[in-house]
Amino acid sequence: MYAEGGRIYVYLIYGRYWLLNLVTGKEDEPQAVLIRGTRKVVGPGKLGKRLELDGELYGEDVTKSKRLWVEDKGLVVEKREIRTSGRRKNGGLCGRPVKGK
Image 1 (tube, rainbow, N blue to C red):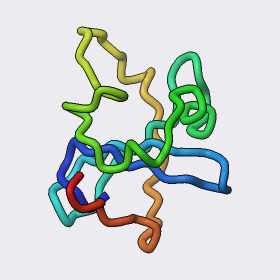
Image 2 (image 1 turned 180 degrees about the horizontal axis):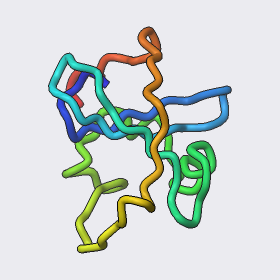
Image 3 (image 1 turned 90 degrees about the horizontal axis):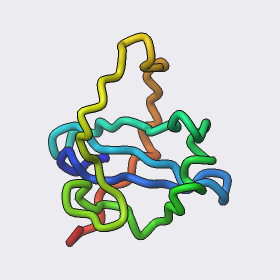
Image 4 (image 1 turned 30 degrees about the vertical axis):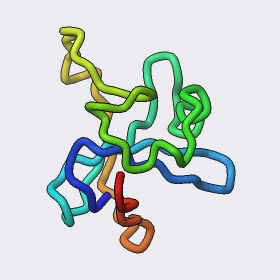
């Protein structure tokens, strides 16, 4: 999460589930959005399994990745459809980006 915005930050929890975050801040300012699900997949662990996430994605540039990317399809999402939760701070769990990624 200390990388520049646009990087993929994945991490394994409970030795079983890969969770997906998209880094949004400036370098050395740990900020990211946890992608918790989609309309068809509810829950960050289930989403990770469905997307076949693994540690190889860690640090990839979401604008250049061949495995996972974000694109604008012109979909308009109403504000009432967006779900948010309170900020969680896991200080010591935020890994530094792998060099060369």
